[in-house]
Length: 54
Image (cartoon, rainbow, N blue to C red; front, top):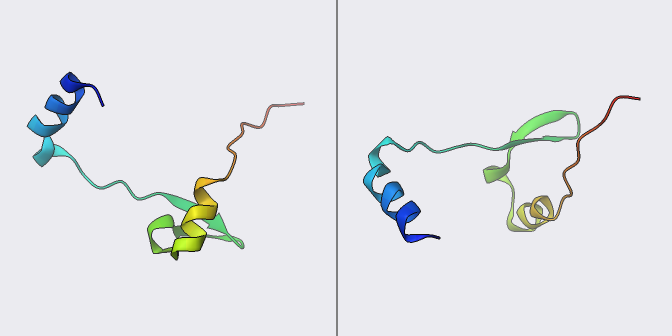
């Protein structure tokens, strides 16, 4: 990380909030942080794509 960016993050530490990432699993949404270690690794390997109109 760049030094300037790191300094800005440290100065604003108290303003930062935790971001929860949800993903769809078997028809419902679950937070990724609740996954076991194997499922978290699988989630990181997923390829993200944008669907285009026909």
